[in-house]
Image (tube, each protein chain N blue to C red):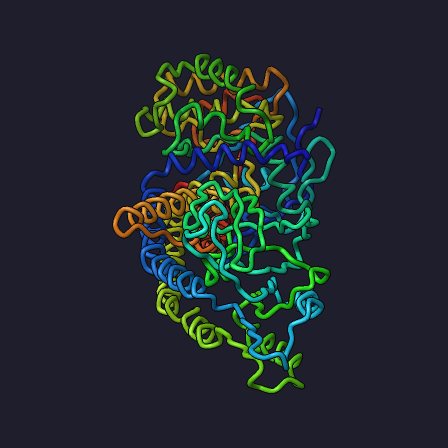
Length: 220
Length: 365
């Protein structure tokens, strides 16, 4: 089943000097239950594509559909709701709120989805335990290791059971053991029917994925 | 009434953010608290002083007019009292007949006190029982007559007896008549009124009401009556009203402007320092409105706490140091004003926070 569909999507940054847009007439389908890796050399637009399909960047043309519903032309507030309810994000550097506790970070997105924090609390604790984050829940992100921070970020992405999980270099700064734990949890999310899209430089990650998109360097 | 399902989690997020960002909250709290203390100790002190001065002036009867009939060529009919009592700018009118000395019936040689027939249009007159008239005494008169309970019989030098059935607490504008035994009368009593005291709604109305009262005596010779007013006091009151607080209000305006500027700078600095946080929130699904609401809510919550703490501590300080306190409406007004100033100052930074581009903030170079 196709979860995310892109048709003739074009995007370029304002003031770009490239002869063709960074994302040019991009058409693709991402299906439920699969992990797709996007790889390519630096500057080829891997992360840009990830952010375009996740509605963080506005495509200049083309159509983006989530489960058959067009979402690229929605007003900003509705795009935010689509992001909150449909997508889970794992950023390269975890991007946790340094002023809040680990548990608060995991539960943060419940506010954006309009869900009860208290109802999700036990699920958050389960996820953290499953990911091996065995630290006091009141601890701040500055007091945990990089690997733990990335696992906390994955818990935050998964707490809302997103249909689409997007990850930008999720294992880039991790040791092999932590990277394996993160990938394993992403795989189980796909096995549960989620659609997982990963941008990576890591050949082992791309070979681990079900589908693989290799981007070419931009023509200059 | 139902509340938005988002309101409670948003309020919780605001409270959590206030405590999580302690440096920002603490700095903002200190600035607004200092502003509120300054306002109360300057403008509030002036307001308290002015209120005390105005109360003293009002205590001298700034709003009263007294009519006195001197010869039979002028008269003060009961109908005129009724008519004046119905004028919108007049709060009350009381008419008096000529005074007679009375003593307690049980102490014929005791202290003499003035007894006055009194006509108050707002009070009905009890029917007379036999040859005894009814009366009430002021507390001072009761004490002088030797009737501390205010109950007993008094008799006039002409031999008329009055049954005193309790004490009468005169309003402030009639205290010039103390000590007095008042015998309620009406138009059917056959008594002629010789004095009337009128109290108007505001000091500003004294002149207009005096003119009205004077118009009733146009045909009477000027020497047959007198009308005395507190117009000079009313003028003084008008001058004092607002004059004492002028400097205080200028200070309040200055403090509010400075608070607005400093709040704007603090919140703007906070938004710049936390821009990555706002970008992350946008990426994770927060709407612009939600982010602006969180920033504004944080500022308002801190401002309200600081205002309450500032007002409370400044008022306690004033009460402890000189026993005064600013009027409650003044405190409420400046509190609302300061909260609004802080909220308005935070609007532009809140919009800036809501407009952070997630891509710019989250991409790792």
